[in-house]
Image: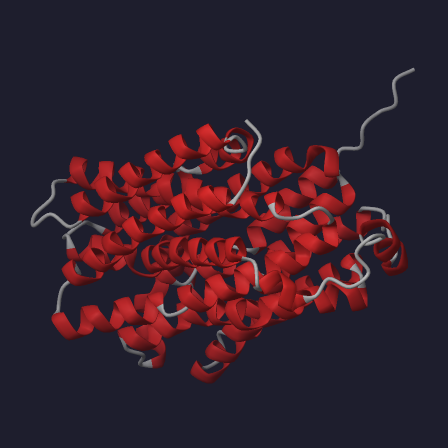
Length: 395
């Protein structure tokens, strides 16, 4: 007799965890005008608000493996989700709380950023590529949902309630985590994943050129993505689109990348495939940003630009995340290398929302910020080619 599969399993938990990495960040840009009015903030401060989680990613990612080693992955997940629940609820109370709460949510998401790929390899290494694809695809699914619903909901129930509602997802995720058996204790993890690598030295990892190349690649693609996330609604408003059209296109930007996020980790392992992927990313970046920067683009042209950028940003993030595993042989090594790569990468990315907002305030338009993103997108692809030369792939 066939054993009945449980309705809730590890794949469902990955689906829920992915939402927590996007929801509390993506909820801010669509409702930024309400926040600015409530707390008398300017565009630079709103940009800083979006940058705070990225600053956390940059400063704290390298420390997360130490937390995982101390607490074990099971308790680390509980800690991160608990912080998210509390911080999302209290960060709407005042302007100071908004920034403090954003720092706490950023710290929690930093932990989840490093912990999730580690947990995937730890619990189901045979299906790591599939689960990584599911993870990156559902990041965009959750982001699309909140990107579309945040502004209309804020109009109906208030922006504070919308932000507080994002506490529901970590509560559900935490409940799901308790349903999953704690397979490995901290000691078991040490024995199983580092039997031949008792001490993974940070300095040895940092000395590898390909680690630096991957960190720059991660940072540049994150700079572009989070710059668009922070200001795309404002750019679309500047192009005289309605609130409904802006919300729909912002959701499309997130939603369109879901299939490609799932596919990329499964097709980019070979060297030749990686070349083709990089070529496609180059076309997507250049066409999307160039169309968005036209003087008076029509709605169909803007839609094409959004589709190109949505596909490209989703694909390149999925690619960058998957490339970490090409440099790692164990769950613990993934957490250490992932921590270094994401720390260095997000330190570069964290200036994006604030810098782009400042450029817009200084020059009164979005042409210069978009041109900056276009230039950096070309550099990103060049760094990808350099990484390709340094790294080895199986065809």
